[in-house]
Image (cartoon, rainbow, N blue to C red; front, side, top):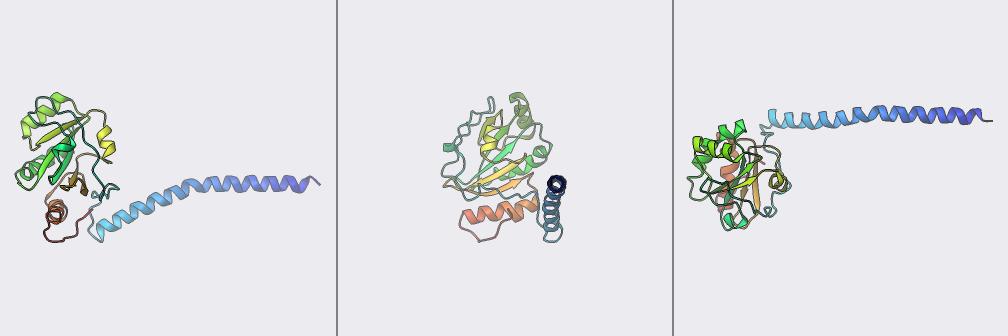
Length: 206
């Protein structure tokens, strides 16, 4: 009478092993499907996969209360430094190669009287950050140091450089992952600025 029970137990164990073997395949399928969708969006629809949507878009910006970059002659980065102003918050570091590539664009953006450009210096050494700005110029009206990455976590940073456009009322309205280039300015940041200032209602790339 015990033989059917033994057979049932063997069958259950066999099914369990089979199910466990399928788990990695299921995970791989999800990853492959996501990657395939991103490639499709990039190749067919021309979507820039670096423009990753943020859960923070449409919400209030995190509170800013960061110490200034010592020796930079800029203000500390606090909520008061961005309140009531259309602000571009740029996360950068001296060791970040794409940050160096992007920097000339930030310098040009800082000349736009409509825009308040501020920076979060991410996991950097003070002297290296000063050397970086001394060599390339300082586009920031305020710089906050983020030595342990806490502020970056609060802002949902994926990787640097990364930029957030914050409306005068403190709402995050646009996010750019990776360095700005002419295309992302034309199709993303500039339309978002115009929309924030009540200009043409152009859909931005997120």
